[in-house]
Length: 542
Image 1: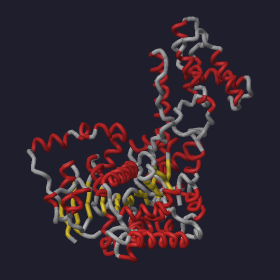
Image 2: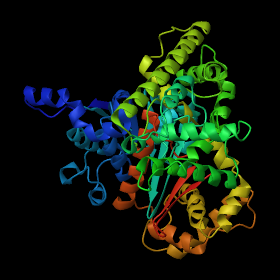
Image 3: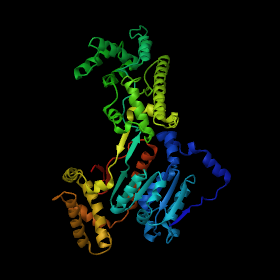
Image 4: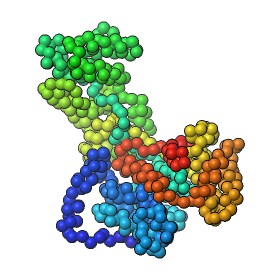
């Protein structure tokens, strides 16, 4: 096994220092998405790529440009003329040379702040002969592996607690699959989420502030600049007093509540009252934590031990907080949206929300420190910024668990397979899922991929159809079939890696890597199938 580090291009010292001293400028656009904590996680990550064909090279290119800490490229092949047609990271001068070395050098030029090295060895051999090799990495991206190697690598990575992303492009089809025992997310960044204003459960300080403001003020300008938060808290109290302490719940009651808010308007052009009516649904939201956060709190992992991750220690603290200081609620986020308001009212509201969020943070931090001490760990081992981020996102926590690849391959849900095959919308994705496994069996039996060489296409189609049928029978789906047109297309692909498909699959894979490394956004759960024929991207849960 030959391993080498790629030398960085020679540059003037002042240019190099300028590049290294301006990381915030260099990564400004992505810092706006995942912040400094996310970028720090990327810069500390060590990524291994298996096979640097177009799919793998495109995936790693995106991560290198994003500033990942270090990359190791593993590939034992040489650059051939055919590679110039689908891999932009090799050129004519590279022909006959190590593909890993050529791709690594190109990637290093894209971002010299990233440490890059290459290993000239067949990934399948490395998986079999040196499984401990993978334990040094944060995450492994395995591209274009056959089924047997994927299963072995999955077991290796799970035992070493290394995240694994599998990707493959095959003609106009491709797949991406994440495999990790458990992935916990603090900042899931949901597309739509209710502002944490507690209009349906105001705390004493907010209630006291609301009581200082008179909705019947005679000054029209002042009336137009009462924040909708104040209007709705007052209206909710008025409603509850006349409805046995209950807030609106039925459709009719919600309409009546909105009518009550409308009745307080003095003129029709009051934006603050328009905002109050539009935001009335925030009053109707159920109090307390969601069922999903309740489920996480009740997870067996929420019983902390010396082996618990930081996430589960904080979940244990959250559970205690909700039952005590939180009075059934998670820590307050502390931010308020823009709204029509006088400057004085808005600033006072901001201060009240920030003060409550800070108080909740201090309570939770104390509980985290106490739990760490109780389980024999350093009470300061979880940083304040991490706890603060947890507090801010306590309503948005996510836990993803992934099935072992071997289990999915040997014992998938027969009901789901049959449902997908019978569903016109999903039959293509399910068909490609079966065929991507069938071509590996075909190759093992025939020492070639279906349709790889000129001639014998009809024979290859016949053999692939039989293998796909046999595979479905092995999975318990007797009588199920893969559409003939997909089998014909699979043979027509001839195992080619088209650059446009490879770039797309590589892009999806790198996107999932960033989610896993930064622990932000929610990664895909299931097997992602790209169907370039029908222009569809679908997730299969088997």
